[in-house]
Length: 616
DNA sequence: AAAAAAT
Image (cartoon, rainbow, N blue to C red; front, side, top):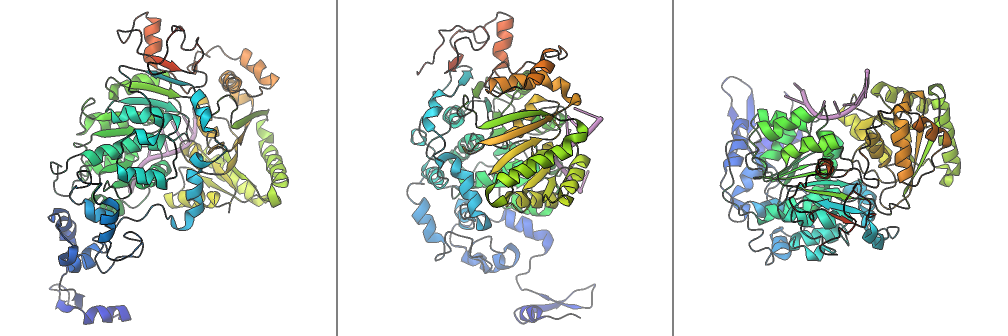
């Protein structure tokens, strides 16, 4: 029989009982709650109405530090770890929060909330993550010139400051903690639209503040909800907001952001994704969830287990919405949105965000939306692009040595011979592994991220890359979208994607946070179909197009009808406009609903040049 | 044809 010091302490502090079907005496605490009763006892427990002293024994054993006052409370729980934490509620949320934060269970949630702003080992990352909006390299005045297209009925006017939007004192504090000074363009337009309860399809460059654009209104809306009529039942939880994204890492990133925005608001954000133990995620869900951030597969699993119900959903946001609705994901998304218990469109509020929005995907997406507003925002300083794009003709057989030349030159030019962070995109998972191996044996510390690696390996790879330990990351398209990795100096398209939109997302991993970035593409005979859209894209963003590419583009197979990027500086434009124009029909019944800001008069393929803003 | 996403 094993005995340890811990065991003996436990024994001395507890009764000893003898199990019926086991002759070995086992120490059991007097307050022992059998595992099968633990969660339901917790879930069904009446909302505590006072200091949790009467729960201390219960919480100390089964619930750990859940109630903040338990013996297991850790130093990072509660604000600043000072006193008993209850004073902190009064200090921070008192008074101003009346009627806003009086939700049941709100008080205890805030108390055990880890401060997301003191980000343990990643202080630098936190600073970098927010530097986007304090970086002097960003010229905020340039925002005024950013091209914006809006269409739809009764579009709410944009705001210029966060102060103009009443998000509540708690959220204002979090915005200050995030060091957000001014809303970004997509935030200026999207937040008022969302706060007005309107459905939205938004097209904006990644790294332009999209996450906050949909999180702020959702959190604020949930804070305004009167609590009480909330559905409950057994082990099922009923989130009010649902945010879906196409990769696990992106869901984690959104979750991290949302936790900052919702800090001490009482709004609980939980993330669920595959590849990680489900039990931990179930436990988090049982503690209560207002906003669930998830990847589709794991969410379907949770729905089928009846651990999550969507019947209370009021806010649905799809990030990278065009990817979510492409062939691979569409059935799962339809199942979640249309075939489970989610309220219908029009009842819930739906927001779709992406940097690119192909017309055919817009058509699909309109199934999920109700009289929505379409918003397209160009990129900051679209005329002087932050990303320098280069295309080189490199035959397949030369790609590796060519990459090595680039990396070598980069290392020699870099500070102290340090390798700048370089993200190398390849087509296949196998190709990623083999290129990574080859780079490593040739003296370039690399790692790789793709769908055949375990989630642990994926997360380790990302951390190792971010920290500079392995300054080269070889990736498949799993890393193409949404991931905010600061300091990526160079994106190499070792294998070009077949879809120009994927190219746009990939190069968007650099040139972030007001820094300049370089994107190099290796073009070979297998990329002929990309010649035309690539040349057009580069021309639109004032890049130098090599003559040989122009040549390929001009004689490219004329299937180039995939010219859906007619928006130029946008990732897409409202397909309703194009179709109504084509049919010579006015979709909205009035000619003045579509509005274009700061765009050339001939933009929009036939819109009256006189169309101006109603609030210009 | 490939990648992603549940076990």
